[in-house]
Length: 203
Image 1 (cartoon, one colour):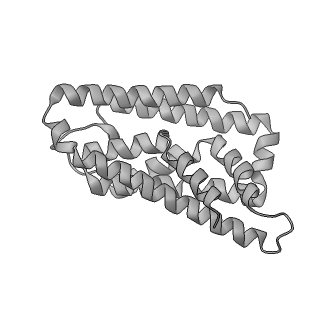
Image 2 (image 1 turned 135 degrees about the vertical axis):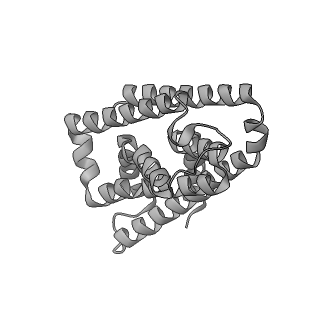
């Protein structure tokens, strides 16, 4: 395992994006357990992109403008829905103290959808992994699976750390209604900004 791969992976994973925003919101709204579950969902959402890259489907997605644009705008629509749900104080993102726990399955599904509807992640795997695997290596596929596993593990650890930190300051947030209001607006604005960035991206 090269230092370059680990360093690059850590930088990519730790950079705030949709998954980080989602786990932070889960930690603030429902505590450490929910944030870890959200991190699991976001990590599982990587698997389809990894499989697509390893089987060559990423090349098809890259070559087909229609396929790329369709998946991209599904992702944009879902991010806008997340922003709307945040402002409406519904779903996983409303920061409230006395709310019935949301099922782990729903939290995980939301996390999966956030990542699975981002076509850039597939292209990223298609372009990123081969840089660390020799084309002449007879065990190239197992090596790429190993690196993908490490990427997923780092994703889970970093996202969970973000969420647990958010959960640690949760009591300070829920005891201040004005802070709660501004946090919801900030999360909603973040999802809108991320949806705009996704909408403007090209293959």
